Length: 551
Ligand code: GLN
Image 1 (spheres, rainbow, N blue to C red):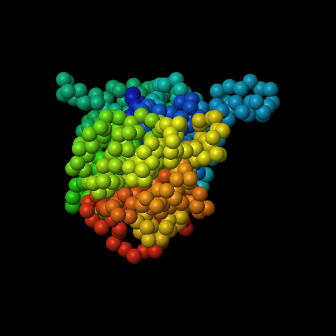
Image 2 (cartoon, rainbow, N blue to C red):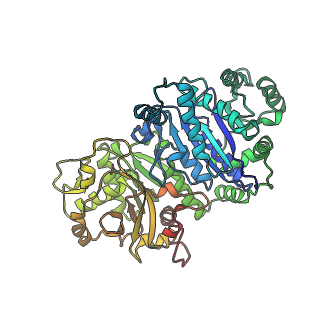
Image 3 (cartoon, rainbow, N blue to C red):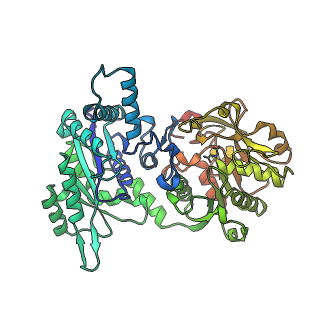
């Protein structure tokens, strides 16, 4: 696209939550990129937490971490996985953060004695946030969290209403996502909920240009015409967002409904035809795997797999890379006593976690994977517990533990480093975001990455205690990745095991369907009983530091 006028797409949701607005936004971004349009995103969350970093994963799902160390809503993960957008602190704004900035300005005296109000001060701060996030992009997709009609979303809806006036109507497109429900007793689909939620929108001065109907079936022309008539949109602006088997089918489903074409028309953008060949290839790879492998995920949030969103996706990506379909089985670590339930798994993954609940179950799973030579991947807490397991059962330090779990442990193999000891605030004070790591040449990790200098994202407070490094090394644990100054342990592995790698960082945040993360690919290859190393001789892989930002 030649014109540099930024275009704005606002995505709202009606009737209920969990309609997949985030995925819809990510998919629209992917379709626009396929037309050579540069996209970025902003998620506006109406809750009062400053960020989701301190929120319980049971309530909020995964906390996604960006390169610059922002703890964000998991929708940013969808956006980064589906597009080339590079997101950071400016791309997720909560009401809490907006109010925080307004109140700090008030305390500084910036409002010169004026009365500080939701309109215009809070709405101005929201508009500024939209402007800041949009910088440099052809198109920004702004997703408003929550449901239209909630008290909390009102300032956001008012801000985008005002924004349209300053940005120009022709530069804004409003997309409303709402459910069209099938009523089995009447045997028909019901459009009333959509109509009502559009009314809600209209009551705050907004009118959708496009309605994305979440349904379990394709909508007939007659139903689309009815929705168009009652909701005051074009008939071809009523789009069926039908449930699909996998999230990776959403962009193609939208393209079939000509959603991107309609957006380009509304925003008056001239683009070439979309090139969706990579999405089609992915579709075929997914639908025709050579084999199915079972990976056991042993964690504490197993009832809410949203908490492991990026991990799940990274495992699927690893599967795409080697024609394997990954089936994930979740094991509640609190209940894991008899490890024979793990037999039959092709691979075992112990994910991130906090606190002492379920820790012994995770340690048992790690021991089982180590002793039975089952491919194992440990992520963050999973790496810390792999060190504890090895210290206890191989190095003979029986009571080894993390001080997070047992502050009085005789062998604090995992501990707080001095810089973390005096921190009292819980919000945004962990080691967060991208840090460089150096891998030992020839190690399994370096071979998997095809590089020795990498950069990966972190989110943790505790670290491996360097005082134990020599003792574990002499018992056979290989510290194959460290911070460039050698102080922090970043990756450990076992040389005489088919695949046993654990990282202090979170590789899953950088995995993409079209660029699977090398550690996940290697793990899935090993679990598929394929040679874990990719069949290539590359010396610098996608994880090379030179490529920082993409991996
Ligand atoms: N609870 C551990 C820590 O804070 C690990 C965190 C994680 O797994 N992300 O260090």
